[in-house]
Image (cartoon, rainbow, N blue to C red; front, top):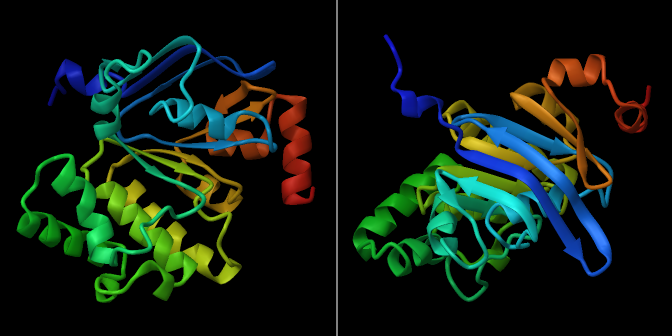
Length: 251
C-alpha cells in the first residue's frame, strides 16, 4: 500500500542553525532533519551545544541564524511561536511542576488554559496519562510528596496532555537518584515504542543504544556524527567521538 506523500515529510528541519550567548558561539551551523516517529538521541560532552540545540526547537533559546521548521511551521522570532509550542512537549532536567497544585491539576492546567479543553475532559485525559506513566494513584498528591522519579513522570504526563507531535527531553534523568532512573527511562521507552517523535539529550548510553533510531554526537557546537547507534558504538568516525566513548564506556 502506497503511503501518502505527506507521510514522508520531515517533522523537524533545522538548517544552518546558529546561536550566540554574547561572544560565545554555542551552535555553529547545525543542520538536521527528523522524520515523524524517529527517536533521536543527542549526546556529547558538557558545553557542546546539545541542550541549546533542542531548546532552540521551541525557542526557549531563540536561534539567531539559519532556519527551523517544526511540523511545517517556520520558527522565526516570536512569529508562530505559540503554534510551534503547541506541537512540541518539553521535559526538563528539573521537573518544573507547580508546587501548590496537585499532580492532577499540574497535568490539566495547560489543556484547560491553552486548548480550552473542558475540565472534565482534561481530568479524564490526565488520569489516563498518569495511568500510562504508572502513577495514577498519586493524582491527589502535591509534588513535594512524590519521589524525584515520580515527579519526572508527572512532568512527562503534563507534556503529553497537550497532545504534542514532538517530545523534547533535556537530560531528564540527570537530577534523579540512580534507583529512580529506570522508572523514567521505562516510560520513555514505552513512548518511543508508541511512535512518538522524540529528541532526547541524555548520558544514558544503554537507553541510547536500545531505543534510538539515530545518534547525534555534538562537539563544540556542531554535529560531528549523525549515524545509527550500532555504527556509533562500534565504529565512530570522528576522533572526538572515540575519545568520548572511551571515557563513558571505559574502553
